[in-house]
Length: 329
View 1: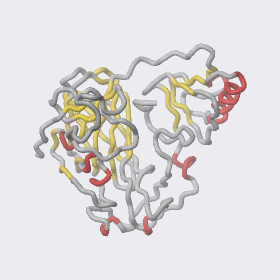
View 2 (view 1 turned 90 degrees about the vertical axis):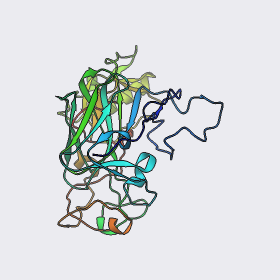
View 3 (view 1 turned 30 degrees about the horizontal axis):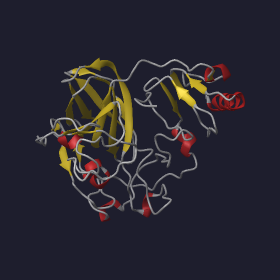
View 4 (view 1 turned 135 degrees about the vertical axis):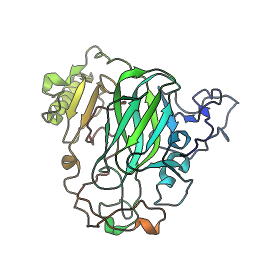
């Protein structure tokens, strides 16, 4: 069993050093040292934005998996992890985070082999939480810029993606949350937060469901949401997405219009993989896959029929597939 490193707490206010937790400032991940060093400004000055979640680094958690990194070599998984380190779990292995603050939602940054989907079993204090589905459909890039879906071009990189879910209940500070792998998985970090109750529509906003948007996700809501956006632009107001999951298989053109939702975990847009990357070719076949540990070992074709798209989380115009609403909008 790997021994966790001493925890160092680093929040927006640089609180007491107790647990190695980093507040992520954005989806972009600049290089950083686990200690707060080299920051400009007076001692104790806030670093980055104030956020509602607490970030737990996998390499500082209790685990029976394997620590990887640090590494700065391009095409290695550790080099693309925050802090250049992460934890590799085999099927059946686990990783534990102990909450410093109450939480009811989680976002996990992970990597799996480019092929079939996998899952993580979540539990808290021995009681099951909702499982999360892991996919490689939006990671694992190949070749040179602007990159391709052809594994024979080598140079595999990117690797990591995020998955998020509501936990179904609020977990108190001090609770141990366990992630258990069902297939080979690399965990970089987990963000846990206490998501507020669904918000209400701002006054004057147009409800997308009134234009035909389907909050169950059964029907394509792309045209309906676009119609609501166009109507809002003409009326100089905004668009409201009530709680639900909206299937979107087209680009949404938003200009001078605010689009707001019911909140993290309660309103999200999603699209089938086939809708976002139908033009991508299938990959070459290979009987087995091994985690790359050096640039040379990453340049190998292998079996998969899973399409990959360059769409990334956080882009409104390129909705991504999901089995659950996210813990952030």
